[in-house]
Structure formats: C-alpha cells, structure tokens
Image 1: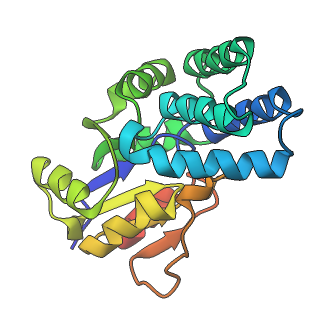
Image 2 (image 1 turned 60 degrees about the horizontal axis):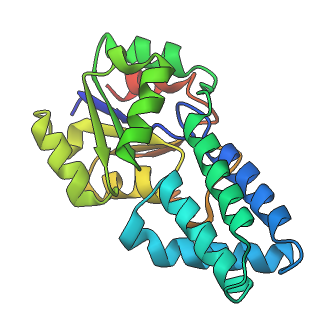
Amino acid sequence: MAITTIGFDADDTLWQNETFFRLTQDRFTDLLRDHAEADHLHDRLLAAERRNLGHYGFGVKGFVLSMIETAIEVTEGRVPAATIAEIMAAGREMLAHPIELLPHARATVEHLAKSHRVILITKGDLLDQERKLAQSGLGDLFHGVEIVSDKKPMVYASIFRRFGCTPETAMMVGNSLKSDVLPVLELGGWGVHVPHGLTWALEHADAPEDHGRFFTLQDLQPLPDLVATID
C-alpha cells in the first residue's frame, strides 16, 4: 500500500533541541560543583526526570523543576535561593532560545508536502512547542500539527484516524527510536530513524534492524527518494 501520510518529529529532527538541554545541564553542574561530583549529579538529575515525567511531562519546564528538586536533594535542603534563581533563569533562556533548523529540514518537508499529507507530531510543553514551530518558519508546510503529552501506539493510531489514513499507509520520521519509530512499527506503519548526535538517555532503545518497514537515514535529504521507492 502506498504511503499517504508522513509524520515528522520536531525536536532534534527538524531543529536543534537536546544541545540546549546539555548546555543547561553543564551550567547546573557548575552551580552545584561544591555539593556533588558531575557524574553523581547527572545520575540524580536523570532519576528525578524519570520520576517526574508522569507529573510534569516532557519539556523545559519539567526539566527545570527536576533540576530544582535535585539541587534541594544534593544540598540536603540548604541550596541558596540565588542558586534556585540561576536555575530558573537558565530555564527561561532555554524557552527563549532562537530556533536552529537542522540540515535539509525545510527542503525535505516542502518536497514531500507536494505529494503527501505531512503532519508535525511532537511532544512537550504546548506553549514552547508552538513558539518553536512559529519561529521555525515551517508551520505553513504541514497539513496538521499534533502536540501530544506522550508518543504511544494508541496516540499515533488516533492521529492517523483523524487524518483519514491507516497505519499501513503512514510513515513516521524522527530521531527517537523509542518515541518516533517503534510505536508506529508496532501499529504496522513505516518508521524512519534519523539519528541526532545527542539523544536524551530516556529516549534510548534498540533498533529493530530486521524489521521490513524500518529504515535509518543519516539526515533528511534522502527521505523523498526513500518514500518514492516505497510508493
């Protein structure tokens, strides 16, 4: 069956994202260098993020709250107010950072939008994702935009139904195997992994190398040719 609908992830697929989280984490490490070694602090922060996903969801705001919680823990409640203020300032800077498109993002979406229904499917904080999409200049290229709290098979199935397609005629493109590729493959769709140099630890998963509908591309440029081959 020909592909009718192509979903694109946003963060670290169309534009840079994890880079800014890493820079902020380095700043956080420096703020608390007198209280914990870097590796120990990273482990504590990751544990807090994992613990808090169900409460705060994905995105900058949850990350900032997890940093504050970690700072309180490692200082045994003695973290200075000035340090909390620095963490909050770092979060605000992340929320205001200019968008940096990844190579071939615009050209690829423009090309495929001429022949297929293209949808942006991203997770995270609603206001931040809307801001990034607006600043990216890509918004008008998509036939639909879905900002979701998490990416599970049932979420993708619901999105595909709303856009009048079945999973078998849908493809999802993204940098996260766990969130962008595996759930769609589970539904019977097509999954294209475009790795980013930096991937959040909670997004790691094993590649389904022997799956007939799974592909890996080093960047977005070859995607139109891949889609044409499948069609």
